Image 1 (tube, one colour):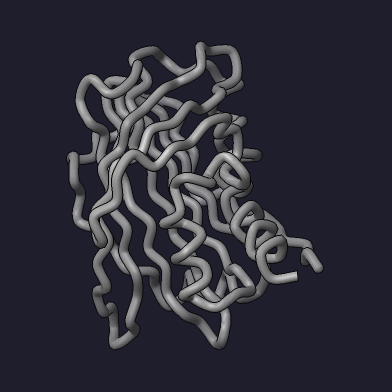
Image 2: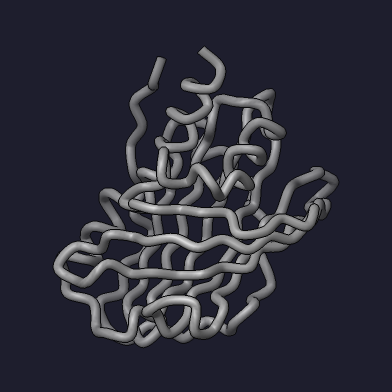
Length: 202
């Protein structure tokens, strides 16, 4: 059964955002963030600028391995990832993969992309996590850049998910698109994983 959550918008910068470095070094989930999401809140951060950045952190009531399997299954992202209308796994070589897809963005033309992903299992503060990093393949769509990561860590029998996206859509984002990211796309990722898990494990 789906549980109600509240959304904490931690940062919204409507001016020029600091440009994130490509292939950024992932940062661990802090103890205060673990506590916040364990209480039922979803943490959302959004920045708008030449490179648009979003972060969402939330609790999924499912085992870590199951959550990793859902995220790694890029062939089926369109079934749960908000506004992804097409997703295809092109190749999978164990810890690396290549996928393509289409995302519907309000007021803008659909965005197409090709992403290369890499899966590792780092430890943060003694906690064994899964890290799935992704980056845009140049010429693989109609975006200028797209990169980020999933950090998936266990927490008291459940799983905390951190998703980071840095995207250059090639155009300035209208306010409506920023609102979409804050209220629908980013928090919808956590809800989507939970719903997908419940579908796979009725």
